[in-house]
Length: 335
Ligand code: UDP
Ligand code: MG
Image 1: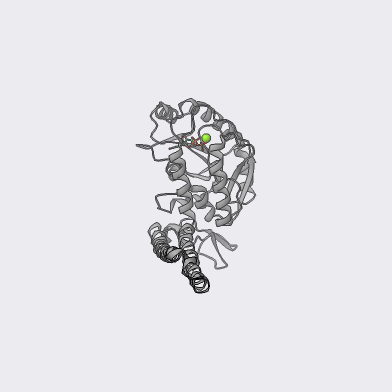
Image 2: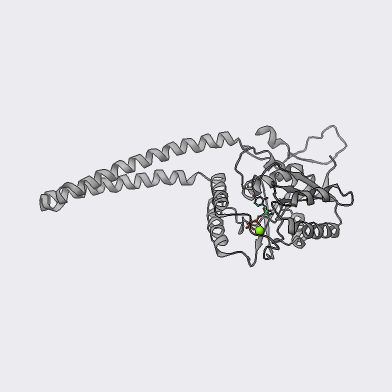
């Protein structure tokens, strides 16, 4: 497989009205960059004419379009992964097929990559989605920022550029539920962001219904942290402690004010209930801690990611200066 400078990876799910304009605008942008390029379109089990349109585009020798057809609908992120696996570019840009992310912003992402970033995200300046779609994204963005510590403002925006080594590392992770921007960020040594325009959906409706959206947010959460499980333990301990304190104070009050005060033992029952429920919650959280470790092992993500190895040893090759060996493939061996 010959390497290219740039790959665009675009998931397509029932986007028949958008495909033609999308590809036309992408080709114009790619040509203007003057780089060698390909456009990888992944059909995520569309039931409209998208599939035929992609096939027609890919078989036209004038287009550098590659069509990847999935047998059924897997979801946006698996579709993007399928496209990444097929891509050959040194830099890979992902974007949506609905033209909400204007392809004309791609050169600005590439410029940021040239500045030395491994991953470049984009922030939708004025987001043109309904508040119902925006609210969960806002919440999740804030949580992600807190838990990962990576300052990125808009994880949901899929207009993103990745260097090849990061793409290879992401492909080296074999877990089932993935949220690509977060996974990719964990392999980047420098991330950048650019502000981009965001338009209304060009045609058709959002392909995310409430259920899919909830699923996505859980994928995101679990791919990133096991903290909710720990919250169970913390909640349990707090509850048990509260019950214990209540029990002691009820005992004291009963001695001081007599049996009527304790409502004939009802308060005591509550205190005992708190203690037992707290202990149970703590036990659940403890089980969760084991489970999260098992999950980590099952996912078998690489334990570390070697950016490069620098050595002054002169290898038996033509290079006479210090060699910087990119180890993008190493990650697979460690997985
Ligand atoms: N998409 C997909 N599979 C799905 C859902 C969405 O490939 O199951 C694609 C869709 O065609 C689009 C992108 O993912 O290119 C983003 O979807 P959409 O615009 O509907 O999401 P939103 O803008 O509401 O986040
Ligand atoms: Mg959209």
